[in-house]
Structure formats: structure tokens, C-alpha cells
Image (cartoon, rainbow, N blue to C red; front, side):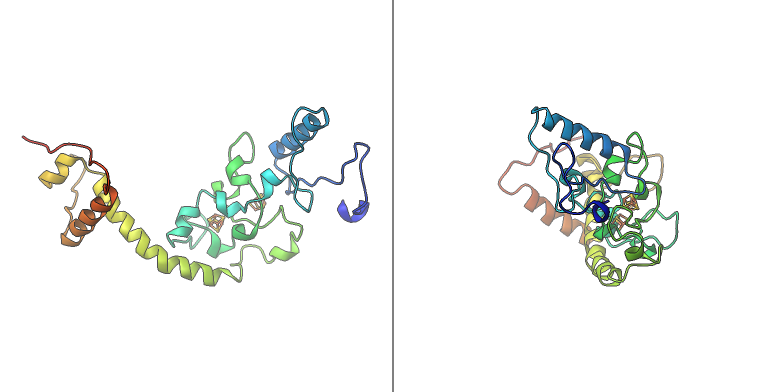
Amino acid sequence: VMDLLGEDYRSSLGLPVINIPGCAPQGDNITETIASVLLFLHGLVPLPEFDELGRPKWLFSDTVHRGCTLAGFYEEGTFAKEYGDKECLVEIGCWGPVVQCNINKRGAINHCGGCMNVGAPCIGCTMPGFPDNFAPFYKMPPGTQISSTISKTTGTLVRNLREMTLAYHNKTHKWIEDEHVPTGWGHIDQPGLLDKITHYVYQKLQFKGSHKPGYKYKS
Ligand code: SF4
Ligand code: SF4
């Protein structure tokens, strides 16, 4: 539409072209933008912000990656190998880190669904360069090899440290002191020496300058 109408175009309300991108655009993005403009034109709210391409800024300034439910997997360096895997989809063709879209936060319809929420890699359908700039679909984007290798390197370390912490946070004070978890659902390994040292240091840092809550259990 911008190519057709040109940069000097103004509507009867004095507005340049507003772009609500998507294939198809998310319905709530359309109604929210129209409502915001109408409220402004009636003098009820400030002028909504639009970016240099006329997209509602509050909806399209962030990449879809930043709001992705799978971003935690990316950060910890774990990636899907095939469709249906639960991890980040970047190695099987997701362009989310360089695509401005809010579908994962907003959902597709009635706050449900949205590409990665249902296991689909982003193919960049909200971007002006779509589809050619994102072809061929479902092939790993060129920059991914570098970024995913960095994520795998740092993420492996971070993930292992978190798993140590998580193992302690799944226990009560008593269970830690007893070195036994009274569960009938399975055996829980007790921490080794390295886990205990890590936990000791972690707790020192956690409660530095404050009182440690809880109590020492006495049987
Ligand atoms: S699936 Fe795509 S958008 Fe989601 S974390 Fe992975 S790369 Fe980012
Ligand atoms: S393909 Fe990408 S840009 Fe298009 S709706 Fe899905 S996440 Fe958004």
C-alpha cells in the first residue's frame, strides 16, 4: 500500500498509511490500533506511537524471539532437531530473532495459539521483506550457526548450574538435613560433594546482608 499511495499520502483524517502487518494480520492488533486512533481523534488519549514504517510501535517494536515461550531453551542452548520437539526451533528454520511480531505474547485467536506456541518456526510474515527475504522456508537462517553455537557453549554451563540449584529448591529444610526425601513416587539422588559446595556458596550469596528464613528442624 505504501508503494501504491506514496509517502505524501494522507487520509481524510490527515493520517499517513498505517501498517498492521501479518499474513493474515492478528485480529486484536487490527482492532486495538483502530480503537487507539479513534480514541485519539476524539481527544481522549494521546497520539499512539507508530514507527518509521507506520507500524503500531507498542505492538511491533520487539522481535518475536523476545516474547517467545521457547526463548528459555535458546538461552540454555537446547534446540529442536525435528518438528514436534519441545525446544527452540531456530535450527529448523525459525527467523524469530530478526522478526518484529507479537504473536507469541498475544496469541493467534482469543489469546490462544501463535506460531511457536504450537510448534511452528517463524517465517517472517510480518516483515516488509516477506516472503523472499526469508526463503527458503524451514532452512536454518545463516546467522544461526554462530548464535546457536554461542548459546550452546554458555547455555550448557548455565543449565548445569541451574539444575544443581533446582535440585535443592525441590526440597524442604528437613529433607536437606535428613538427606532423604520421603516420597513414594521414586528415588531421589542425594547431592554429591560438588553439589553441596555449590549450594553452600549459593546460599552465602543469596542471604548476604539479610536473615536466612526458615528454621532448623529438630525431631
Ligand atoms: S523458536 Fe524462534 S523465536 Fe522462539 S526462541 Fe527459538 S529462535 Fe527465538
Ligand atoms: S510467521 Fe513469524 S512473523 Fe508471522 S505470525 Fe508467525 S511469528 Fe509472527
